[in-house]
Image 1 (cartoon, protein in one colour):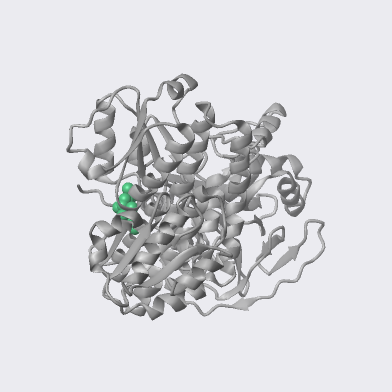
Image 2 (cartoon, protein in one colour; image 1 turned 120 degrees about the vertical axis):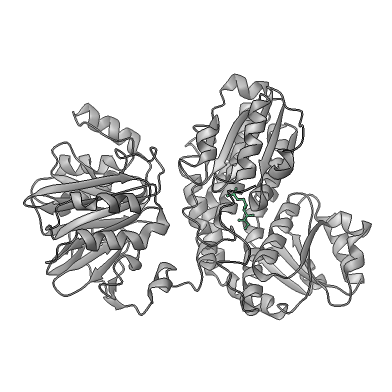
Length: 610
Ligand code: F6R
C-alpha cells in the first residue's frame, strides 16, 4: 500500500525519483506526486490516476533539484484526488512529507492542530504529519520528526524534508517497510528495494523507531533519544524482478505471507476500545438495519467463496436469511428482490463485469447495495450505497490469496456488527469474538514463521503427480474446501473437485480409488464428529486423507495419512487459518509440476468482460 522514494545527491533527481516510482507502482496507483527542493524552495507536482499521468506533466517540475521525495498512492483515507495525493506540506510551505500506512489517531491530532490554527488542504490521515513537524520544528528536522512520531498511533512509514535543510531527508518506520539505499555521494530512502536497485545494491534495513537521517555524504541512524544506532550495510544480489517480490520466488508466495498484514490492516480502527465492531461508510442507518428482511450476496470465483463464509456469519449472528449467488447466474434470473433486501457485492477489484451487472439488477429491483472491495475508487465502490473496504494492498498474483482472507474477515466483522445492531448479540458476546479476532494476525504470522510453509511443501510435493484431488468440508469448512480446490485448479491445472463431505456418498464417492488424495478441512467445529464419519468413508475406499486440523488434535493424526495443523480458534474464525495451508498446498503442487503460478494460463486478474 503506497510507495515512497527519496533521493539526496549531486544529480538532478526528478527523473531518478520518477523511475523509482515506476518500480513501486505495484503498491498503488490511484494518484502520485513528487516534491523537489530547487533554489531554496519546494517544487511540487501531483496527479490523479496512474503514473502515466504524472509522467505527462513531469516537465512542469524544475529539472535541477538534487534532493526530493515522491509517492505513489493506494488510497485509504480520502478519495483519489490531487488534494489527497502526496507529498503533503504544512501551512508555511517549509516542510513536505510522504507517508505509507495509516495514522490511526489522525482525527484527534487534526482537531488539535486545527484548534491551534493549522489549515488542512486534504482529507488524508497523512497531512497531520507535515503540520506536526511544522509545530515541533526548532532548527532540527530530525528532532521534529521524532516529536511527530511520538504522537502518532498506527502503522506507517514517513519521510520528511525541510526547505531550511536542503541536504537532509529524515525517514522513520513503524511496522511498515523502509529501506535505505547507500551509494557514493548520494543516498536513497524507499518502501522497497526495487525503487533504487538500478542505482545501488547496498542496502540498510532500519528497525521500527530508527530515525534515519539521509544526506549526500552519508546515512546517520539514531534512536528516538538521539543516540547513534549501528545498522549494517548489506549487499543484495536480486535482479529487478526478484526485488519486487521482496526475495520471494513469486508474487503469490509473497502475498500468502502478507496475509497477517492484510488482516491487521483490514482490522485497523474497526474494533473499538469497548470491543464493539465499528464499520463506517456502510450506508446503513439503524432503521434500515432493523428493517432488513434478507441479504443476497453476489460475487464471482474466490469472492463468491468469501460470500459463502459471510452467509454463515450473517445467518448465525444477525439472524437474517442469506442467499449467495454466482453473479453471472443471478444477473440473468428474475430474482425476487424488494426494498427490505440488502445486496452485498463482493469484488476485490470492484471491476468484475458480472458482479457489477448483478448489483445494478438488485438495485433496480429496490435493494440497497453494499460493495465489499479492495480498490478505492473502483466502479463497484462508486455505484454502491455503501462500501466496506478490505485493506489487503495491491495483489499481483492472479490467484487471489490475501484479498480472499481480507474479504472473509470483512464478512465476519459485518456479521458481528449487524448481529449487535439487530439485537441478536450482546456487547459482551461481540467483545469475546473481537478479542479473539485481534489476536488472529499475530497468530497467523507466528504460524507462517514457525515453518508451516515447509511442512505443507513437503506434503504437497509428495502428492504433486496426482491426476485428481478431492477436497471435503462441512459447514463453514465447506467454502474453505471450495476455495482450496479453486486454487489447485487455477495454478496446478490438476482436476480437483470440492464437495460437502456429507454429500459425497450421494455420488462423488464413486471417483475414489486406492491412493486418491482427499484434502479434508477438519478443524474443530460443531460438525467435527460428523466429518470424522466422512473421513472413515474415504479411508474405507483406500483413498489417502490429507487433513487440515486444529493444533493438538492427535486422534485425527492416527486416522489421516497426512496431517497439517493450523492454530486452534473459534470455529467461526477457522477459515482464516485453514485456507492458508490449502493455498500453500496448491502453490507447491503447481511449482513441483513446473507451472508458472503468478500468471496461470487463460486467466486474468480482473475480469471486465461478462
Ligand atoms: C481466483 C480469482 C478469481 C476472482 C474473480 C472475482 O483466484 O482471483 O476467481 O475471485 O475473478 O474477482 P473480483 O473479486 O475482482 O470480483
